[in-house]
Image (cartoon, rainbow, N blue to C red):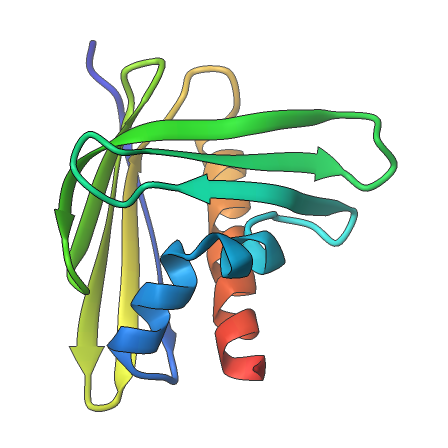
Length: 138
């Protein structure tokens, strides 16, 4: 199956080592891994290695809706790249690039077929922007 690819990115004013840790450690993931202020991520699990699995619970704060976002890692290069597969066959790759004391984080993901491309891009970008604010605000 062929999927259309969507790219999102941000530049974070912090070093790559901290960004890598905060992007991948469950105690940090729960603070940023949701798109809107009416959502939260009450739990996260992460076995960051090839063949390892991750799972983040995303829920509306009012309890009206929730889902598990989960996948299996296919490629992990420390402080450089993470690629994982989702149950529906889509792939996601996130890269981390050091830029003079800042870090560029880029995610390329396969779009799903249920929601418009711009809606998907906007939602994923909101999560990445929340991660940037979390890192820079701590």
